[in-house]
Length: 179
Ligand code: S3P
Image (tube, rainbow, N blue to C red; front, side, top):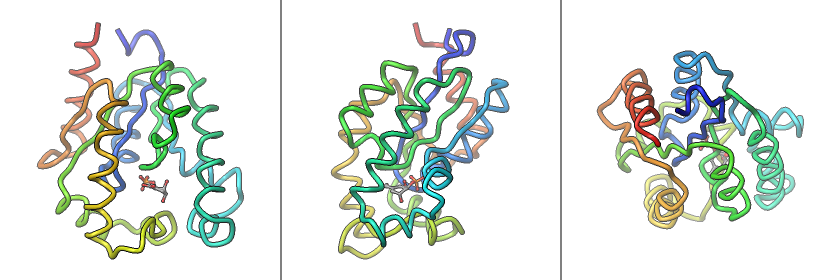
């Protein structure tokens, strides 16, 4: 069973799906460490994500993110919250799938929009990714990313109408059910 094997557990999903909050609570529940890939990128770069995008561009951020995720894939007994675009790279998909279970946290556009608007991390951490405005960007990117999240996930957990603690229990039940 996953909890006893010590494999890292990866949380994927769109911005605002609750990955960081759930990672912290899931780690507490399992007695694991937790790490957020965005935190690690910012620590290593000594810069906020918004500044990396502004000064070096998105490709430089994606390079740094891929290096960080490769490093985090080697952690044991750790819950890893990945940035929403980390799994767009084939090499990252392969690295995390080989390392441990991948949990896709889902929510509809209304919920994501509401959570993003209410999250103080949004300004520093979530620069625009397209020329579209708020909700239109979420719809556009979700349509393109959902097939990637689905293909990468070991299982998915709906976060809508569930508290973070309820999401954690749903994840643990799914982990217990894995062969
Ligand atoms: C991104 C999501 C962000 C952060 C960066 C890019 C994305 O992380 O990595 O702004 O491409 O969806 P969160 O998913 O933690 O907001």
